[in-house]
Length: 437
Image 1 (cartoon, rainbow, N blue to C red):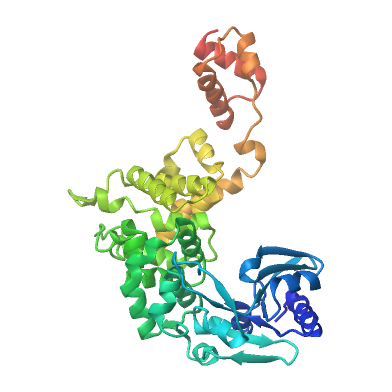
Image 2 (cartoon, rainbow, N blue to C red):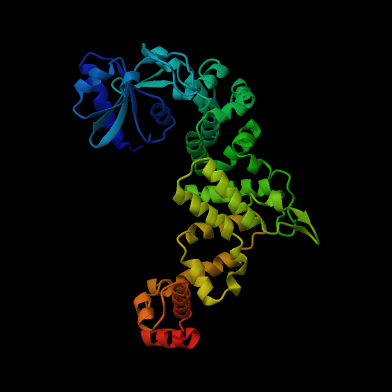
């Protein structure tokens, strides 16, 4: 297990020890090392107060000094160094009113789950376990440290974090812990939209995303956070196109099939059929007329509610709106097909289409057609030809600036994409014939 940050983190611990302080690795980095996973970062717990830490190390950032939290910057890497503490009462389902500096054991017992409550002494190479985390790792169990209602009442985000850790490691959630999650699920609304969004992104883009989605459903959290998705459950689909079953089952199958998706792809998958429950009707068969338009508007509302960044929201909404366009790619005129292929979101939309097909009828002929065309139009000028004329040329031809400029320039680009216009002279002749002067 190659872990380049371990040595640097160990040096920080050793430096604190030389100054007469206790210090250990703590939390997720210990859990991951026990499970043979390379940690993304290292957190260090110590009895040194924030002011002492800032005196010992040259480069520090006092991100939460009053809570005993300092970032130590070493070798260009940030390491969180926090003083052992016991939290006071919580008033906002997130932060304690005050903290009381304590010892290593008390520091561990205030944390969320047993698997995250491990300490590690990198000098003696020894795990210190006050909460039973090692046994729960062996038994593949997510369990709160102490009473689950108390832990979840301190920070309601822990409700959804239980789901995330269970999904990531494919661990079961201990019975009392899960019962508490289900009972307290309606209180998840006390958590800020941004924090909820971040946890949902980690679940939906992480390992075992389909399992995570199902846990969100079983826990009742999905109905609170994404009620629009729960409405997919039981919504029938035409069996000739969707032998897999209802809309929710189809979506979960796509989640099961994703491989390290981007945020945009994961949420495009989650929301691509969100408009179906509202547009469901029975005619000669089950129909969802206009579900892409409805779904795109609903997706936009959901993503705004969860405070997604504008660029991510726009990409996801575009994918939801466009996902049925693949049905027509073989019939598209060359210029329309090329415009579709050159869209910035097209690679993500193409993967959405592949997942959509694999989780339903299984036919990938349109997917293969698009892949073939992308290879065929591999040169930059095939999809993005340099403009043959511009606004100044149109003014020189006697046109008055206005909406007609966009219409003319688009028509010229269409001619280029269809390989009908190749020179500036071709473009000017085309404009005079079609638009006059």
